[in-house]
Amino acid sequence: MRAAAVPAGPIARPAPVTLGEACRVWAKIALLSFGGPAGQIAVMHRVLVEEKRWIGEHRFLHALNYCMLLPGPEAQQLATYIGWLLHERRGGVMAGLLFILPGVVSIMALSWIYVLYGALGIIAALFFGLKAAVLAIVVQAVLRIAGRALKNPVMVAIAAAAFVALFFFAVPFPVVVIGAGAIGFVGGRRGAAAFAVGGGHKASAGAIVADADTLLGEELPAHAVPTLARTLLDAFVWLALWLVPVALLLVLLGRGDVFSQIAVFFSSMAMVTFGGAYAVLSYVAQEAVQTYHWLQPREMLDGLGMAETTPGPLIMVVQFVGFLGAYREATGMPPLLAATLGGLLATWVTFAPCFLWIFLGAPFIERMRSNRAMAGALSAITAAVVGVILNLAIWFAIHTLFRQTARLAAGPLAVDLPGPASIGIWAALLCLAAVVAMFRLRLGVTATLAMTSAAGVALHLFDMI
Image (tube, rainbow, N blue to C red; front, top):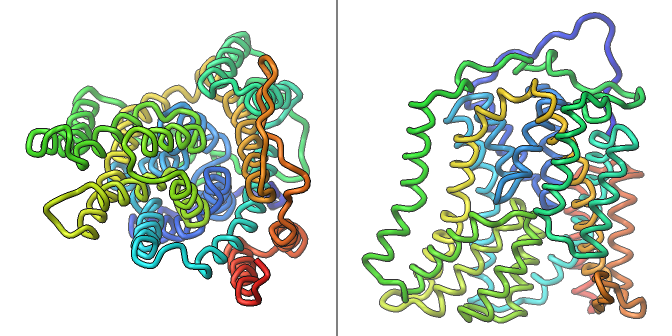
């Protein structure tokens, strides 16, 4: 990740921003949040750390490390965390909601098109082109985050070990995170420079944005000091907002109703979704397809394609699943109304817990920024997450560029391999064009997405895909 050269003389801290000004920035970030968590986190870093200097490098990574430990979409939780730091609870709520709003609107609109008109060829072509740009965005994000997190050989080794464990041996994500955290905790407690935030690394060509030179500075905001009253209030409010609707559905409709099933299933999922979107989506697909029979395997893949090529968290595919489940199973109301309510219900019970985790835990995590053992654990986790994102990037590339894959399993080895003869020539060429556009021509995310999506539509119109 490139950083601006250090200017001469002292660096003035940015002026305070109002909640309204912050909301406009969060809306901009949300509209550019393509490419899954890797791309979303990279966009947030570029805007909030490099351009606006609202938050410094170390504080950003500290918050990211905490969000990586939580169930749920880490990018949305990171937005909530930083919004809370800037403007208390209101800022956290606005940042978290604005971050998912474009995805909610996009997936809902596409879901309506899907059930009314089917998988139109031109829509499929649009997704085909968008996927090429998404792959380039993810690759760029891997390089940017690695450039900041892998400051020394120890961190590089942790990232490499995490990648090998996940890609070649299918080690569960929680095991990787816990192992990295334990290594970092011991190293930080012993004072090893490699595990210190910003320590143990060579000087780079650019300078990182120091916390002291940002809007938030290094100090702990007054509202970030944890108190018993504030903790109990946050717990009561967000537990009620999350679980009261679920309880009402169970009481009024019974456990066998599709709305009750959606509420209970996705609420349960929200508590165990460690490992990022791809780790949990396999579980969602299995239950939604095989247990509840809400949709077919092909439809699940279509929903994932929608989520991968629209702004917002990849886990937003749950809205599509809830939409189809209610569309087919609900009785006593028009199917499209039921579907809309089912999709919004799945979205609400998936994301409401995210605010609970942040508002309860962030004040305590902020106080631990100076704790060497905790800082070491979180730094090691960030290094491991680089390996996780690389694993996801390669998984995405395999399934974007190749029509067929094979599962190689031999003892502890378990890896997805592409079929070389099944490579999609046009998909590969569009991906190459997206990479050249972003890395060589320095085109922005929006321009690259527009270019590849237009190319996908053109290929469809000329009957080439």
